[in-house]
Image 1 (cartoon, rainbow, N blue to C red):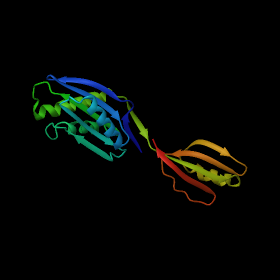
Image 2: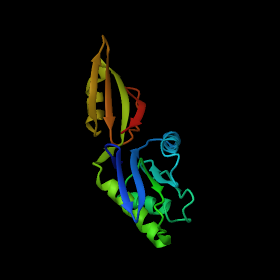
Image 3: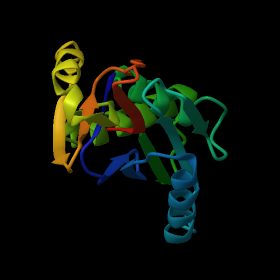
Image 4: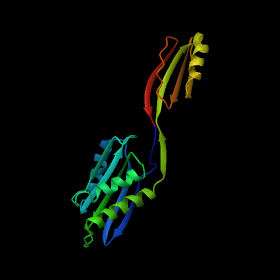
Length: 195
């Protein structure tokens, strides 16, 4: 399973009808990181009129949230989220911090402004594809090498390390698929999954 995310965080500024929109896109892997970033921006921009954001976390968009922070409902966080979805990104949060410039934008104008901000910050980013791997420790006796080789030949995997002792072999491998093989001659121990 693969997904798209950003390689590095980015910041930008957009001015629309005298309102300043400070934009930040950050890579996040867990909801607790969202809380830490929100606190950071609330402290850094404590005098801002609005601190709006949206995020998607998880390779299957497991967690999503929007925040309008006082803007009319659906005019800030949702347009940001929709742009993240349009670009098929995950594990990202976009903050748009607005300083009101004295000219009201109206609901349609706000939606366009927050959409533009999200689009522009994403365009500054290098987008990367991450692939999910399953990591295993594979152990077998030296006398079972031929049998183990036949089993391993049927699996699409990458060998990360190979160690021998007096009577056994230990491999560390990673695979794009979950391996469900049970035999008394070769032992597959799931270690972790990671990107």
